[in-house]
Image (cartoon, helix red, strand yellow):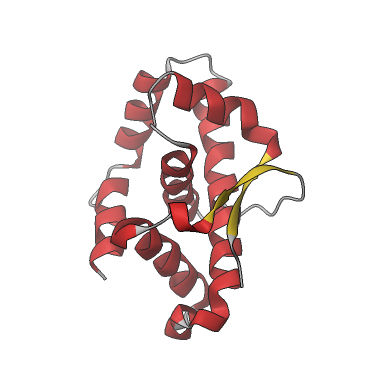
Length: 143
């Protein structure tokens, strides 16, 4: 049973910058956004080296856990991913999509030396089509 959510060490500096600049209030919030982005773009990236993990209980409430669960269900095409016995698999899936989303954010915003606020807004606008990343997140939360 998973009790913690790992943060990829590779992006520790970026995660701290996003929190310190008030873009996202917590590391958890950044990971939820990054996981949704990584999932939307199909960018699931395993990682080995982790910085200080976040207690799974921090991901409380309907929204965070719903995002985590829905990503795992969609990834595995199996609603049984909601079973308590699959919690470790759900967390791993979430961690790897968050890592993929952080990679996208770094490549498209940070490496381009864009301001975080403007860069994230631009990224979200680029994701818009018939459906936005925010629609995807809302859809996942309402499933």
